[in-house]
Image (cartoon, rainbow, N blue to C red):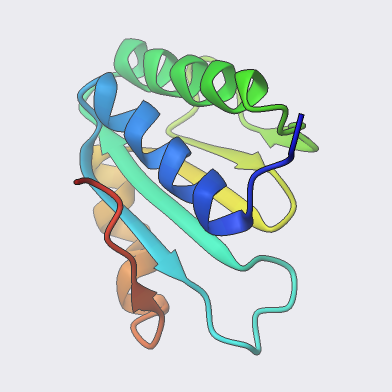
Length: 117
């Protein structure tokens, strides 16, 4: 099995999150100065139950692609769960926490990547 490229992993994660009705799914190509990750996938959900569903969809989709989850920060009941796939980091927020941390503004110089369609 061929391991997909980082951009393909990011797009697959975004599509999996979207399949569980994650809100405002964004894929950001991180600037060169961000050496730890090539892409961020950022999304949110209005409830902890939906956050859990999004996280499960992403982890299952990427596992099916042969992509190993290196680390997960946050568990059930957390308002922000981070999935570390090396070159791709997936952030799943509770809506209000996403607005508070505003990663898109923090990384405003990151390039937006089309992932749907």
